Image 1: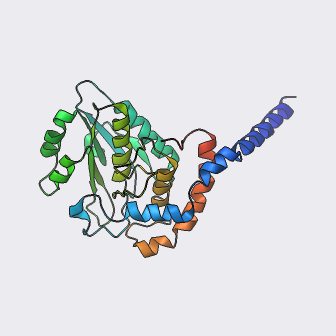
Image 2: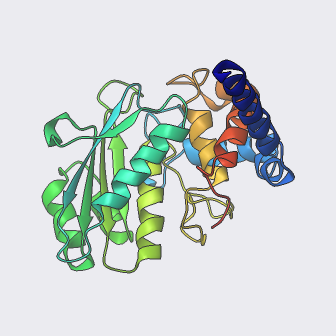
Image 3: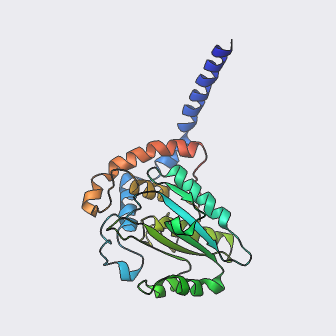
Length: 262
């Protein structure tokens, strides 16, 4: 008797899952942005650089991303607002929902590809000046509300990132900085004021990792998008990357792993 019951239960769960994935709410989120909008957002964020000194750099017009696992180490220098748990949860979400990207926390700073500094505003400038080598544009980093620098020693492969996040100016400001700077460190290093639905816009009110930015990272870490590609080369493969991402997004939204809210 047990086998028929289990078979019926499995059939019911599969049917329920299919029905959930096909709800109008889920479809509205999956199709909220056209291919043209997503490709435009990709081009505006992945190519170029927010830092003016890097806009004409050797990697500004090539795809840059981490080729392997990104291990994240947090250095918490805050006096009172300790936010390491938020970093851990966001890293886990990226690892779970962005195909092709592998991220995890690391207790060993020397083995980490990404170092995240959590600081109070009063210490922000001092930590950057003490941490960053001379060749980096410290003036640009210090002038920003929060900042990150990412780079690599092997061509367009990224292998190191430093992220500086202020923790004592309210939760909304912290979340915007956390999502923007960690996401940018993975490759979409440019900002654009025209992307109103994106965290990659210092003037937007977005404070969550939303669907638009999820698409940008999933397009970047798609296996067809190769390190070193030019805008013309990558534009040919982006429609296929978007189509596959939409299929995955139905399941992710249906299971509550991603929100369209700001």
